[in-house]
Image: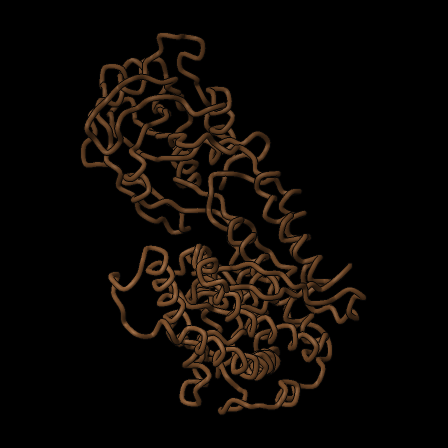
Length: 531
């Protein structure tokens, strides 16, 4: 049997965005996957009369709030924000360390099969598309007064990382003052002092050694990594707009649920007694010995239908009417939908044939009738705003995906285009355009999932109509969802390893800086490093 569900205003808001998102943009990225839907249910599921009324449903329908004036109270979305790019290190720290030397040697390891038992699982292969020339240009950009000497630029026998760094350094991350990850040097890291002395004799007081390292994925996920870029201003604005819009719509959403409850009360009262009478023969407990094979199967179907009927029977009693869980309600999930939560009792697929009637469909008919009746009694202006608020979940889902830190880069023109596209959504939400000629409910059987409720049977869905703001928002959300695939730059192959950098004093062997970076963090065509 379906248990009654809580739909207080506070619960509605939590279901609307997810608890964490209501706290603001900072934690919104962490709980972006929680934004699954926008849900509206009345604080009191049944606003209709307690006893079952014998009068026609239209005579019992309550009055709603006066028509709305204007659109939704959405704040401006013309804000400074950018999707965060994942980073593994602190490029500014590397720049400062390089600037301390008038000249550095630069060794890029093309790859080896070195394996050790340290914090990384071996130095393996160079990052895709990153070569010594690019790294030399990077050093020149980070430390303009430091000369760069590429080591063994065209020498296939140049030393490899594993021949200079004789053990894997442990992974010891910490968060620097700017929020970027910095990596602590171990107390002792064994290096080839003979090779370092050779470089010192060639005039390189320090050498920057760079190479890709294979790190176990679970280990790497467990260490501190950071990101550059933030969507917090935008997410805060969306939360603010959602909160104000829901407060505006609250009376209408309560009214919509009350209309549905009143109509459903009457329709259900007409159907349940008839079905109870038809299934009464299956109430006595009987055994397999009382039937042949077909009769036993039919009896089991009747028992299943009786269990399915039980919560509906409870709903038509005056004592249970206030908590009827199957009462249709208005949900805001991608669009404004009328839906009902049906009992979870399993009914075998052949029972309708054995019983010569599909009682699941028969018990669904009152909800359908209530949905059809309610459509004629819900104000079009309010429905347009409810539909518009429902589309906010699509917008947020697309932005949440964009705002999840990832290994990718975006150009400045593409980011400007992205911000402009999002800013253009604001006028759509606040629009007070008149209803389109074809704005209407569509009879649309189906189902959708609501966190906290489970599967909801859809009875009707509202469509804002041709050139409506809600259709424009849905189209814009789809474009936002495709933005990363269309415009992301320097996206690595899955599992692409990070780069390790070690700056070593060639005379003393002292290690001055240990860092880990993603290749695109250091070099991404004309975009430069992430500073």
